[in-house]
Length: 113
Ligand code: 5GP
Ligand code: ZN
Image (cartoon, rainbow, N blue to C red; front, side, top):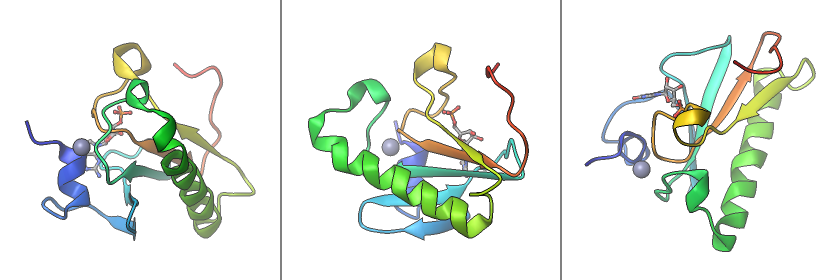
């Protein structure tokens, strides 16, 4: 079955893409849960956190660094933001292509729901 985030990375379905490089793609979430809500994905299809291995270490670092730079550009770095990666059913994962949420522009409660 086609993966929706692979399709976005390949430009086969539209998304508001703001970051696009050899390794990762960043785009705005279609159903934003905060004033700023973006997703960073690896171009490589990895279904869940459980599927990561040592070889993906640099890829993960790239996701986090890109998220940090995005937060600075969006002007939420100082006020604060939250990075989220949901894993499987109990974690609330709905799209099975690894992605890092960047949420900001409002106060985030803790613990999460
Ligand atoms: P998850 O629940 O798996 O952690 O997050 C999946 C996220 O992807 C959700 O926040 C959802 O709104 C977003 N999403 C699902 N389909 C699309 C899509 O086609 N385009 C975009 N931009 N976001 C999507
Ligand atoms: Zn995929």
